[in-house]
Structures are given as C-alpha cells and as structure tokens.
Amino acid sequence: MDSPDDHFGDQVAATYDDPSAAEFRPEVVDRIAGVLAELAGDGPALEFAIGTGRIALPLARRGVPVHGIDLSRAMVERMRAKPGGDQLEVTIGDFTTTAAGGGPFSLAYLVYNTIMNVTTQEAQVACFRNAAVHLAPGGCFVVEVMVPELRLLPPGQHVRPFSVTDTGWAYDIYNFATQEMSSNYVTATDGRGEFRSIPFRYAWPAELDLMAQLAGLRLRDRWNDWDRSPFTSDSTRHVSVWEKPR
Image (cartoon, rainbow, N blue to C red; front, top):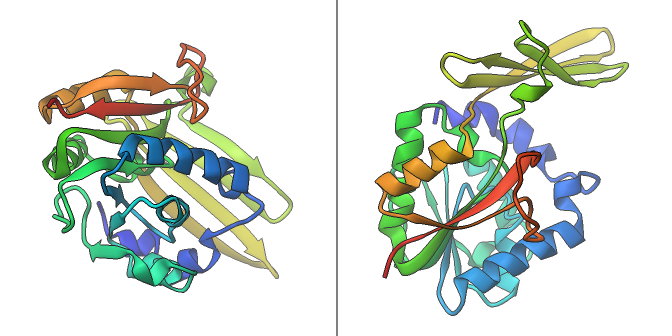
C-alpha cells in the first residue's frame, strides 16, 4: 500500500465515522457483524485494516475475540477512544505482509472495498497469502468489494463523476490497461479550493478467485450482499468467502 497515512491520516480519521452514511447505519453494521460472528464460530477473528473499529467493535461485543492490522495510527487512535476499543489487540503494519499475534484464526476479513487500496496485483496476491497463513484449517477469508463499474462508462470515456454539489465535485479516473483507478475530490470553501486523490486497483471476482487459489484457498460462498442474496451478473458488489481446506 502506498503511503497510507497520506490517505488515512489525522484529517481523514477525524471525519471518517459518518453516522449519516449507509455503511454506518446500525442495521447494516449489525448484519455484517452477525455474518462474521457466524463464520468465526468459537474461534478468534482477524480484521485487515481495522480502522476506527466500525465492524471490529460490534463483532467483539458478540463475544468474538478480534485482532486487527492497520497502517494508519490515526484511524486506530480513533478506535481506541471508543468504548471497548482499548481492549482489542492491533498490530500496526501493512496487512499484505504483517504477522499478527493471537492466531491461528478461524476468520480473517477485509471489508468495504479496502482490497482496492492495495494498488498492485502482486500486493493483492500477497494479501490473500497473508490471510491464508493466519487461518486455521477450515478457517475463512472474507472480502467485501465492489464489482468494477466499467459498464457505467460510455465508449471512449475513462472518467466518471459520482458526486456533484454546489461546493464539491468527485470523480473516478480509470486506466483500463493496468486496472488502476483513482477517486478524486475537489472541494471549495470560502473561495478556496482543495484537491484530494486516492489511488485504487480494481479486480474482477474471477481474478480474486485465482488469487485465493494461489494462496491455497477455495471459494465457499459469494453473495450479492451481507443478506446472502445471490450474486448475479447485475450485482454491483460482492461478499466472497474463501475457505482454507482442512
């Protein structure tokens, strides 16, 4: 991951938890934590990119021992300030290579498109291998990520605006040859402009399956969402579960 604190430092961490955003709604968080708790069973769980504890804290409240890996100290400090946040063990480091204590784990998970923050195919493969190393036989690695939105782009266009307001503009830029993309934000406040760009790498479900296979994992389930609805050709995201053979 490239200079993560440039993208998830103090400024981003201070406003990351947005109660009005869909992913922070209690019913959404509760559903995700419920699925993960079921997959973890009686064993501990490891969250790659634990961040501010959006999922880790409610999962821990369900009785699952949760460990985390994250590069951003600012995000983890936000989690530490929340009730129960000081009880979770967190290793500061790159989740594609960093080893965490407390294993082996019955569950490792990486949610909310964060696999795309890993900006090379090589590093994404390393992420799957690191997950597999941490898992006990029969354990699962879960990834939640969008399906690349290339069908929304007209022929010949590689830029897609996704938010336009009176004070800000946001747009994605795609490089089809390398599967690189970036989300770019322009905001105007009191006549002053600010620009922020976050790099990503998108991957198709079949490519992620191959990464899992290289790590010795096999696909167990793929859903359209955390409600376990079927994944179809019209799905805009997926929750995939790969299992480490016993």
